Length: 235
Picture (cartoon, rainbow, N blue to C red):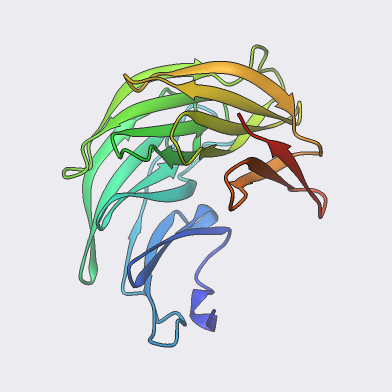
């Protein structure tokens, strides 16, 4: 990775074709970095700044773009914890064109997203109010239509949700909980709604990221505060 990536603070990215799309949480930015033929990163080809705030003055004093996911060819959704928004953009040459913006529950703090393998539904784990939202996806226009809002835990006091992953078969969602240090397991329904099945210990402290093994049979958990990870067999 080239020095060009030194563009802002707390980056998170998603690659599509020959471009890496990166959000910088502390700089309110979505930036497109084209790849070189040698798989290095070029200077940014396009960028856009998100503006706004939410009702939580401690965490939502301004935009905090937290993650980006591709919902169709060159169409991306940015989850903004600070603004309670999901904003869709299309990449066209040296431009990032804003297509649509969906307002989430006030104070929800959308952090990470997972797209269903069928491309019809987008699931969002909300950090601040410990919920999972689901939306119907219009892949062409980038529009998101709210479907459901489900608690990530039976008791949410002191919890801060983190990452969300969907199983390759699209049947289950897994969400990290920092506080009780657990993983919530949801069942996805045919109409786009989700059902909370259980919450299991994650095997460590402050689960920040989740991922599947290459066999898709287990969920990996990575901690924020300690250099360790754990493995849990999935549903």
